[in-house]
Length: 268
Image 1 (cartoon, rainbow, N blue to C red):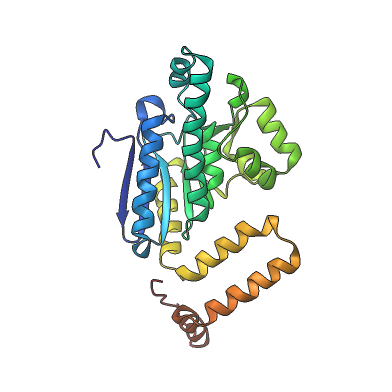
Image 2: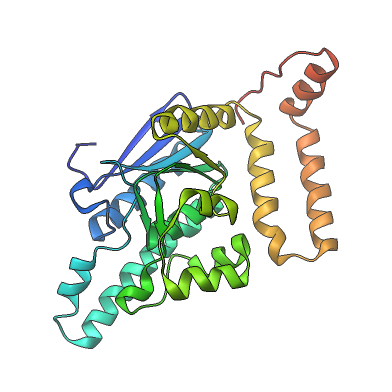
């Protein structure tokens, strides 16, 4: 893709990297970026056999500053119903991307630095793992422009940090740092800024070279768990384990364990 595209996609050694590429606007979400994210997901899904992990990052030293407020300002100059229709149509496309990330049978890592604001928080929460540079700043921010959250933030926050903390983050819209984000369960790891690329790459490579079918099934089980009763989840686990037990990766895994060596998993 050309460097002036709103979203870049690179697939190398089993890792797909999606780069949000509006650095002059702190990677704020607009229609071009939504289209770019959708196109990137199309390519990842079409080439899923060659991909073991996905990284989502921002260009220009920041992840995402939320929705493009200048775009909203222009929309609001028109008739109210036209503005509503345009914004709701855009959000529907955004929500489709969140659902596709959630359903993707590969782990998705958010590589965080600079600002993670508004939909940036929602996008981060849609990912399976999140690694942040020490100086990263987070804010849900929607309340400051007089709107409620989108992108699944009200769904993910209550599950990740609990109801009281979710209400604090959403209702006050305060900024907070990476250590607080880690302590409350929003992110997995905080690292020095200069180590962010290598640590993220290490995680992605580890996942990409793992047992892909087992990882996909584990992600699906974990995603389903909050809305399932114990009996339903136990049945799903039993079926998933049985399916995994028929795979070449399972045979390799147990053989490597017995032989006291590192497993060499194939692509599935």
